[in-house]
Image (cartoon, rainbow, N blue to C red):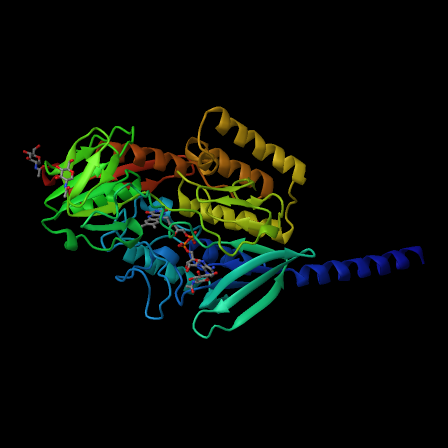
Length: 450
Ligand SMILES: Cc1cc2nc3c(=O)[nH]c(=O)nc-3n(C[C@H](O)[C@H](O)[C@H](O)COP(=O)(O)OP(=O)(O)OC[C@H]3O[C@@H](n4cnc5c(N)ncnc54)[C@H](O)[C@@H]3O)c2cc1C
Ligand SMILES: *[C@@H]1O[C@H](CO)[C@@H](O)[C@H](O)[C@H]1NC(C)=O
Ligand SMILES: *[C@@H]1O[C@H](CO)[C@@H](O)[C@H](O)[C@H]1NC(C)=O
Ligand SMILES: *[C@@H]1O[C@H](CO)[C@@H](O)[C@H](O)[C@H]1NC(C)=O
Ligand SMILES: *[C@@H]1O[C@H](CO)[C@@H](O)[C@H](O)[C@H]1NC(C)=O
């Protein structure tokens, strides 16, 4: 009798348990790498979810569009891709888990190869049917313990609103330009664009071009333009020791002081006549749809407070993916998507808000005490591998192997050595801790090949 009652109670409890679990609904914002990988893992776990994507395409920034500004419907173009782009990280670090890039492609594939890879990924995991294309999420707010998500069909203008238990934000953060606003810009008679709108170098043929900024875009676009421009002035204050043998028409300049009609005056007082300017001054974090009730403090250069660089501490049923810099972003996104899925699945529970806040506060204090800007709160750099270890330890997801971090470190060295040749190296993973680096076949001096 006793045991019968026990079993009865257990049954009821299990039914309730499953009912609650069944009801869990997840909203994923964006169908770039963040959204696609989230979709794959949520699907594998049988979790109820939907992906909203503002465009009619998957792949986010990896889809090149020759146009700038707006598309055929007058909608803003999200992509920052340019025609000649090849990845700036080698093949193994660009692969999503369990889905290798094809054999026989370059070690640093073109955007086209990579974009095709993402399309194959979506097809392979049969993800498209979960995506509502042309649905622009316009508002996410927290109300009575649910997420109220408003989205709008970008063509018909029809507005929808639903409730969700979890929100995974994957709208990317390489789309909203960070403009430096330099004195005299309005006087300048030449062209000024931001790297978001850079597409092809041809338009700079035989012109005197100024590139501002020495991040990955600044270096890559600078060299792309220098292939055909008459001169390439590169203004930046990077302390990095670039040992690249730059061509004679490439000239390093300090920061820009101001423009006038015909050119630019630098902070060292020198003046140069120029025709065109490309600002490679980075992007701003932009989450126009996140309402105050989300509990995040968002400014153009930081999003806080986040636990493990992704969980919204004040509302931990929201995660924001991809907010790590100086890391293998694709591999990190894949791990974050798995961590988020494991969290939603209930595989682990987060620490209390106070504990999460404490951990975050310690990182924030360390940054402040070094006199650094709060934007550093998103920097992984030498902490990258430790981060992957922590994510796995806590959530039980498979660990991103240390070899990824090691490859990235060697690639950084190769970039410092020579930006023209770092893509000639091929990196092959041997095991979780080791890799070999060789030269791509075309680069091997024939006399050395037996
Ligand atoms: C020029 C360039 C080169 C890069 N090169 C490399 C590289 O070599 N290696 C590397 O690892 N990384 C590189 N990156 C970083 C790149 O951003 C990541 O590889 C990756 O694409 C990020 O994916 P994501 O899903 O976070 O964002 P995105 O690819 O930006 O995708 C976001 C998606 O969300 C959609 N969206 C935005 N807002 C909304 C909304 N409100 N409602 C609905 N949908 C919305 C967008 O339309 C888009 O499809 C590069 C980035 C740029 C810009
Ligand atoms: C999405 O909505 C925002 C307003 O919330 C708007 O600024 C943006 O242009 C829209 N994007 C698209 C692609 O319709
Ligand atoms: C811009 O400033 C430089 C340096 O002061 C000067 O030589 C040049 O004539 C100025 N151009 C115009 C159009 O005023
Ligand atoms: C959650 O745990 C189950 C059981 O251990 C495991 O099979 C599954 O892969 C885990 N899910 C994630 C996303 O880690
Ligand atoms: C190849 O190697 C030989 C012998 O070391 C050398 O003479 C030749 O210049 C090299 N060729 C190239 C293209 O580097």
